[in-house]
Amino acid sequence: AHCIRAQFGEPDNIAMMAESLDFYERFAERCDLDQSHSPIGLRQQGYLFASTKAADRSAFSDRIEQQRRANLDDVELLDGDEVRRRWPWLSDEIRIATFRQRDGWIESHRAIEAMAATANVPIYLDVAVERIRVANDRAQGLETNRGFIASDTVILAAGPFSRSLSPEPLPIALWRRHRVIVGPNPNIPQDGPVTIDANTGAHWRPHQGGALLAWAQPERDVEAVWPGEPDPGFPDLILRGTNGVGRLAPFWLEIARTMHLGDIQLTAGQYTMTPDHRPLIGPAAATEGLYLHTGYSGHGIMGSPSGARLLADIIVDGRVDVNPFSPSRFSGDTPPPDVEEVVL
Ligand SMILES: Cc1cc2nc3c(=O)[nH]c(=O)nc-3n(C[C@H](O)[C@H](O)[C@H](O)COP(=O)(O)OP(=O)(O)OC[C@H]3O[C@@H](n4cnc5c(N)ncnc54)[C@H](O)[C@@H]3O)c2cc1C
Image 1 (cartoon, protein in one colour):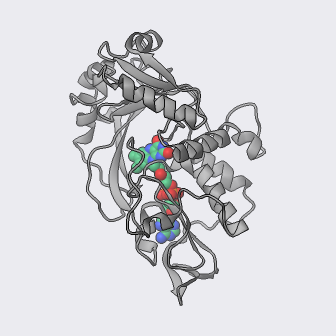
Image 2: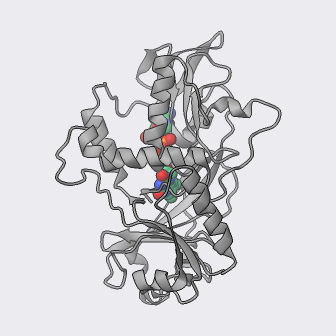
Image 3: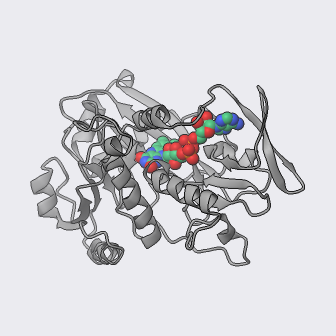
């Protein structure tokens, strides 16, 4: 949903997202563009994680403490009354929430276009990579539908297709993820934050007079596919279901009652999930010259500016002192634990 947040729980993720948000905040300056407005549609209307369970207070304050220790000191703990004072359309049932104003969203296609326009590198469109050529465990280049491109340095950053393109197994599972766009409607507050039901995961945010809605439903691992095939029952589930967005923002139930199918756009893409929900950034385990920049586990828009900087440091300097996202973390006998439980 083009959302960006530093409100994570685990220090390495917080550092990655904070660096990326800083990049997006200073995008115009960094890309030498007109600084009078955000060229990427950055909106910092905040991220609200809200719960209807009073017992979540201690987990939420622990998380804020963890964030402070990781130098993220602007996350607020809000009780239900304060939540409703700021956003009167939210439910009386909300007991506790965390909020960070500097989180929000961008228009990521504009960021990509601006970066492509300012990057001093050749970019080839409509070229399909068929195989990464490897000889004697060394990357040789790319076999494409337009011929061979020789290179002894190859970066695999093909999103869900990284797994099938990789010459070696990658610890990535592909999960379908839906997105619903609801067209303009005067009853959808446009000044609200990204509102996340911390108890169910259903979330929404304002979008061009309407809204973007998403939800992490349990899915099984599938092959990479584009475009994804959405489940036609999803809009009903997220808009009308008891655990959908109407639970915390009851106005959705009223909108859903009067809405026509034509007011909705439904799409599905794929999350590239690693076992610890962190990306794979750095040299591949068994193929010299091959670098991975993939496996963002649903957080690639918010994490990739920092991840790309890290990978550039690794390639240019040959190594970095600390790389918490190194693919080699999965090569030992005991894989790292899943340290970041909130995946949206
Ligand atoms: C519904 C949904 C909502 C999401 N919401 C958010 C969000 O709010 N915030 C967030 O941070 N992240 C979000 N994500 C995740 C985010 O979209 C990904 O993490 C991010 O796009 C990953 O970037 P990437 O460059 O690794 O892969 P991709 O964006 O998939 O880019 C890979 C590129 O490689 C190209 N490619 C693939 N195979 C080949 C080939 N064989 N030859 C040539 N080119 C190839 C593709 O065309 C594509 O351009 C969401 C994902 C989904 C599905």
